[in-house]
Image 1 (cartoon, rainbow, N blue to C red):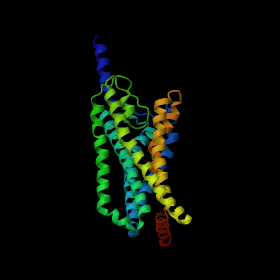
Image 2 (image 1 turned 180 degrees about the vertical axis):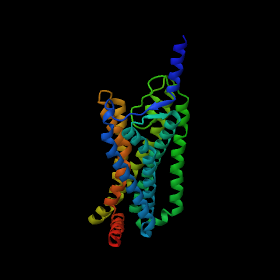
Image 3 (image 1 turned 120 degrees about the vertical axis):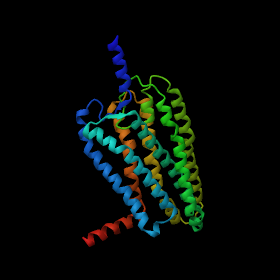
Image 4 (image 1 turned 90 degrees about the horizontal axis):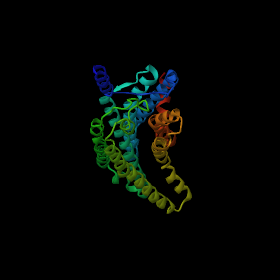
Amino acid sequence: MMSSITRFNETLVSHQTFVLIGIPGMQEKNSWVAFPLFVLYALTLLGNFTILYVIKIDQSLHEPMYFFLSMLACSDLGLSISTMPTMLGVYWFDSGEITLDACISQMFFIHLFQWAESGILVAMAYDRFVAIRDPLRYTSLLPNSAIAKLGIAILSRAFCVCFPLPFLIKRLPFCRSNVLSHSYCLHPDTMNLACFGAKVNILYGLVIVMSTLGLDVVIILISYILILKTVLSIASHQERLKALNTCVSHICAILIFYVPMIGVSVVHRFGDHLSPIVHMLMANIYIAVPPLLNPVVYSVKTQQIRQRIYKMFSLKKTRG
């Protein structure tokens, strides 16, 4: 009798911690992923900090488009810093245990920065519409005060959306397996380990996704319909291409953000028959790739940033 009570108590204690996993079923090969992941993390930090530094020191880049790009870089840095140390711990040191409170904190910040990034992409779509529709009044229509208010609104919305998550998770009883599917904590993944009571979480998640991410996608689509309508009204073919070219980086950023998110959702819902390695790859791409690619895309496709970075590194070589 006493031994069964002890075992029950031990189970309860163990469920105040979760176990993060790297390569499912092949934990001994986690180190294969560790070094590439570390390189990716270092490049992500370098790329986003470079974007922020270049925009800060170059007065000609103190325009609405680049302020929004700074917000995007900050969001990417926040997401990387929230997840990568934990992921590196799992893959490099097999340090998979994480407390419930730490897991809740991590999932809060992951979702906070993702919702913020979605809002920033909406603001950038509006920015492109204003720049193409009324280029002569572009900076006057989007003064610094308006950009600051937009930034505060985006962050406030993301915080309000994510604020209930810790309480919704904390109330759940965890008496099933405490092994999570990924090397970081996500709300749907943690919620699935609950014995019961997850229906509220499922409903909340569905409502939030439809009312925020779904609405963001609709606004972005409407913005680009209006942009296309404006571009088609331009007489010069060369000017049309020039106007559209200013949107390429933003379109790439939208695809980089939403495609992995949709891919992970599809794999979670309909990919039970797929190999666990596919789930692992999709989850890592979903978290690690967008923060890496965004600065690359904007550095390659935005002439002003590309030239400034080139000058910065050329100057260092000359001094060296």
